[in-house]
Length: 167
Image (cartoon, rainbow, N blue to C red; front, side):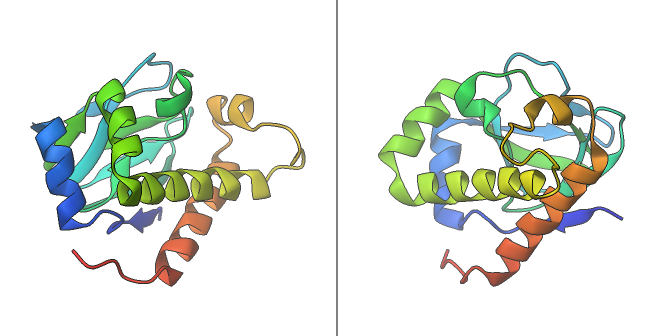
């Protein structure tokens, strides 16, 4: 069973994202982005759930309400190395990459949450690598599911120990 992560974003942050993005829906099985995509929007989940799959199609983690889909490649411009699929009917906010980047600079609290979580995800993946000094992106693109699952567990561990953020 994959780790389920929810609750990173406050109601205020979701409203801010809504102002700069577009509310959308996805049905079960809809692919939100896939391995190899050149770009995708930042996705903040309002309702429902999405699974993140490795390059072999194995589930790594699920993100639910108040969670978000998006990794460091949103900032770097690298191609996507995981696939996101709706596992429940979803309602979400999609924010264009460039608009999202501007928001991170304009809203310190949002920037802190997103960068902290994406760094924790990456750190968790690196912990599992025998090549800790080497970037893991090539391994992740090839679908190293054990590395990705450990990363998801680290994210969950950090999430459970973070103080609650008022909405």
